[in-house]
Length: 471
Image 1 (cartoon, rainbow, N blue to C red):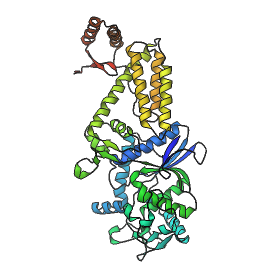
Image 2: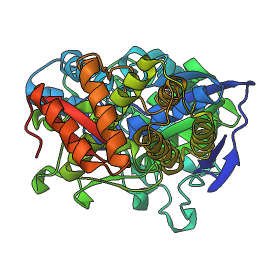
Image 3: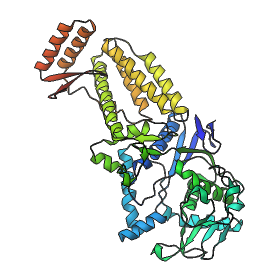
Image 4: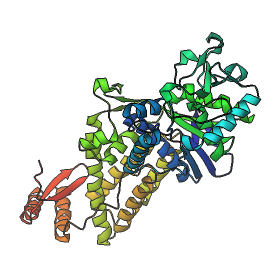
């Protein structure tokens, strides 16, 4: 497998620390509100990565953090008049409901920041002992970026143009403000009842130390892959590298993978632009989570993804077309008839699919292999040349594709609701159409309609529907 490493800005062969095992840390949600589709763009990219690693023979151990203590969670819980743990629990539960609907595989561990304060305190103590951290006037503890020679290498920041000695206490800040960042924040009245005792003062951890402490606990001081959105590169991931490598005297992460931003209607998602969507918002509009997953999968993770309502509607039509295609295959499979076994087109498709997914998750190449197999299969179906073994081989190929995409549901498509008599008439009609015996084909259509079924000649082949008005 090959991945584009943000740190080196090069595509590199994936060589794990432990043979055939991949240790993966993914930045999870900050549970101050419902996750939006921009968040899910990142989580689905990470799901594809996890599935691709498994598909290519690696055993995966994934850690995804839940940030339940930071500036936003404290501010929002206070505004709601709720205890922090009660406020964040609602959004933790919602997150797990959403990822289940989107078919995102669960990680092995979901550490909550509030459950790992002792580990964070120990790491800060180590940084202070090494001379990399110092106390501010209010008791807060800061990391000195001057003590870490490689600071700025991930984000490619020119440290020569940065203001020396500046401090940042807030969790997030702009690239123009590269500065000493808070490891431990002294309590103030805005924190309310949210605080922990520490060797320095009553307070709480900074956001960046949370991920370093939790990743070290579950993955060790050095692990294979760290992922997140492109907006995490700075300051979050830059600060993680600095404090982790300073504390442990070793390399923190071997491969950094970041996905690009999601746009909505070509613009940055914003409530003021009325283009801000959670999964719940889209499902309230009548879309299925599987259709949303299709849209979020369809663009390479390092390219901006433009999300539109129209793209969801197109996804619905595409998925419906595949469902019809699978019904045809199921019928042929059940007939136990002789014919082409489709081994050539299936083998070619599977090889291309794996080549794409192994090349930095090139979903365009993999989806091209999927669509090519569907087109070639429909040619065999329309010509009446596909045998039962061929139908089974094609369905098996789509089961294989779903190890990555988890979107086709070929086993859910059933022919059982369509009687054999109707399917046989459809076969005869299709044979007549191919032979250009159009009068006979029209007669077959009339017979099918007399039984209460209507035909729709779709790009995936002719399909029949009970009691529907096909326009």
